[in-house]
Length: 209
Image (tube, rainbow, N blue to C red):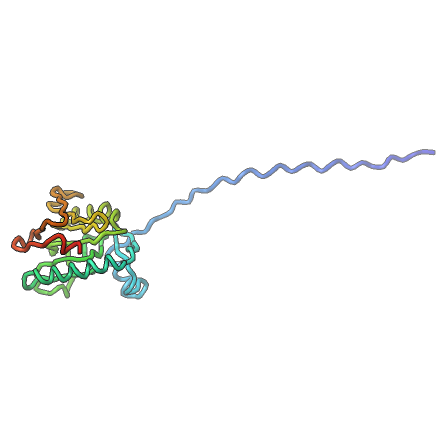
């Protein structure tokens, strides 16, 4: 009897694993806004009136939330400046300041020179600022390393950083480049003067509460 051999089937070849995909580097553009574009976003409602943002080097950045301690110091400083300002000077509280095409920060406080238009025609600029104050707690690093060089470069004549954690007032004058060449730290028991109002002396204790 003849035996017919069963046909054999060759094993299927094992598929090679796919080569790992090579990531494709897609260039990303980073759009920077001008102050005019930034203001337009507010006009059409894309940025709401209550949103705490500011324009820094063309970027729209969220600002730190205002805590009760920060708010209390801004409130008291506003009263101090109002009691000692010269007639005609303006006090701005957390309002925008125009510093070039791509910068529109919102300092905590500004003492502004008198202007015939009463600031209805345009935002204040560095030349209008007699004193700028930032109250710093959680925002200290941002105020010292981002905003302060920006203020110096724009030519803001005098900046105070009220450093709540260190319990001191840092005074910066004589802007040159991105730095202030004259700095001073004032503590409780001392007094400070505003460069534009040399006759006015403020106790540091009243500033720090």
